[in-house]
Image (tube, rainbow, N blue to C red; front, side, top):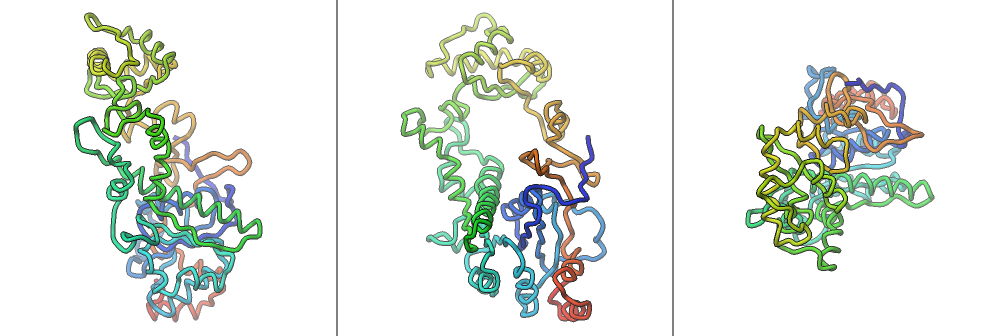
Length: 391
């Protein structure tokens, strides 16, 4: 697998500086996306997390890749001074605390806009900045539950299944925050003032489910899960176990693709019948017939037979197998950086290509470097460290 390196600035956000107040999940993912796109992201970590003996060694959290880390005690007066100094010349800030936390720290939107009116202030929460649930904790599964999205994931007659945390934390949360920050930066470049981007996972997941709401209005989606075209209800849009216990995924929605699948596989096995697939009443029998057929060969044999066709079949690969698949290898969808295999930045840009520039930092690994950049003399840095304001 190709090693990806980038010594020079690259990506469409080159020249943009983002301050990230350290958090977990969707906030760091949004910061990673901005860093992958070329932004100079400085992560503000907690002083108590600093371990100088780890500096220069690999950090395992890939969500923190692409940025530098400075350790600051935001609860102290001196720490707040350092944070505001960082924010003074920044283009954007990202925070993922509960509503009101940064205001109590003296680092809320009003505090920051007073010193930097052009700042884009990105806020990441599950419930949003207001509403009856805003003050309370939650996780991906609870946000999905309230939006209706969790209800729609699972087999018919069985409990809802959490779709990892990709849909809430990262799709409806971090990705929406990154998009919002970029949109607000574009507005600032056009002459607008800085503003707050209020990204809530419940809002983002609701937007992602727009098509399902549209299909319901069109009478093309039923509320019970596992009985619809795209939720595993249709036998031609589902996964099947093969002879070796591994799985293939079938997505032959359109008639011409289904016909290709039928032709290539020799469906059905005797005495099964090729029933009318457009009638949902036939779906249970068709699913049983397809299941019987796919259990006659191992997964990779089916994949080899159908790979170069429009039958819309693919092997269900595990986390180890996926990076080695020929399509993903050809696209360099996964790359190696500093000896670590990981997903490559996405999407691709023809004129300002992205690249992985830095491995994930340890908390406080770049404190002195960053403070020197913003004009702090060495003696002041020493005073701040002695006072515990930085680490």
